[in-house]
Image (cartoon, rainbow, N blue to C red):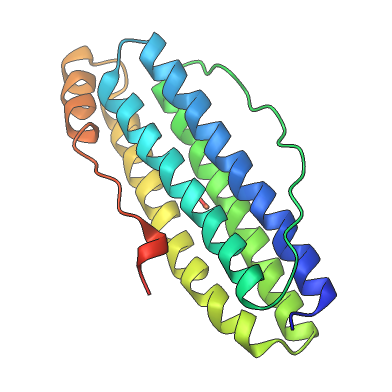
Length: 170
Ligand code: FEO
């Protein structure tokens, strides 16, 4: 049976991951309106990934005999100044999520829940990837700035991203 404090903390994280999904879906809408279908598609994949992050926690709570409590999801920002601005916010958000996962690990250690600590290692690894990917795209955007040709090519490249369902991974 999962410790009550751990259960509450994971329930909060389920909400935080749903908020992340919502944020990236809002960014997808922004890019659609901006006629950048590749960026929009990348954000929709990101949205799907966040849903699976949430679902993985949801499944875990049940596996451990806990209770999932779903709460209201905050409305995300709706628009950004530029693709560069959107990716600055993406990186900032992922750094924040990393801090939330670190807090969950702290709670697992505090209540001596080694099983949850082990489960959370997947999220720690995932956050390294999340930050690196956002940081890499941000660096490219900084390099090309206002060049419309380069933005067009980056849009094409980002449109190639495909969704991999993390709930199917072990
Ligand atoms: Fe679920 Fe992007 O962290």
